Image (cartoon, rainbow, N blue to C red):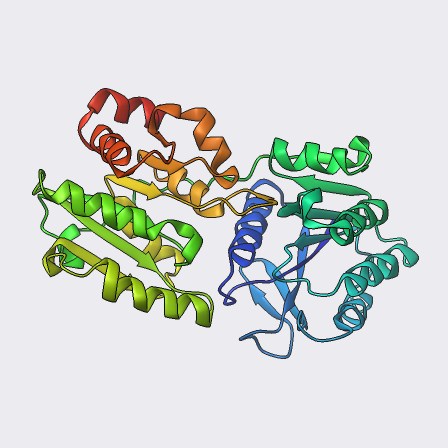
Length: 354
């Protein structure tokens, strides 16, 4: 069987790129009778096809370029007898409604079955343009894959036929027992309990709340250490992070926290996850956006207690471990939750098991 994926792909610094690589690895782990092609973005890649593991990567398109669908169709035409093409869709990647629909129609003309994962489904409040686009996507796909109930029934409310929609839970990469790191390698004393927040560092990640609750915890607990790990994505994020470090973190003892301000390859990220005692995911809700956090699934795969906010991106964890969900009623409430996650051994075990 020949499968073609249209997606960003490493070294592109993007959650969808990592997701696709994980997916390809998983497919090859269960079948010897498959050949996978990734028709990828061109960022940071050679101009010719290359091998990544067992996968054939064909750099094919610049998603910000007008008419990118033509480059993709040309690359797909060069591969004979594809059984299916799967599109990893995210609004931050595929710019321009018409290009995407033209791409899908071009594949249909070639009698290539199409599946598409909508990593973000926009609520109808976002406007008629997006309702129309999401319905057109569904009409031109054989199967539409989503990761959450919220996405599934939002599409249904917008008039998409439920028979086209398949909900598949987001995969979770388990942290290997072989991955071990020493806290002291990162300059953290071995007797400190590590609070970790990680991923792309943006305004909507709730970093201010993480720092505020850490400041409060330090007054009573000398054994805690905060680690903020990741990189900003945009110029706006860089400015935000600069302001955060100058104002919000002002006055914190420098040895009480560690800032790792860079994009983390998976190997480095897994090591950092292995030393965490509690993971903080205090996301702010993005109105009218339904998605599932890939960072959440990395955190869950590490088997560590997570204190999270009530964000639709984190809905799976809020259902599994409601005892550690922050309702946004103030930093005092958040402090109690973090203390429970750190020191209540029974709850820590329950959270890990679930």
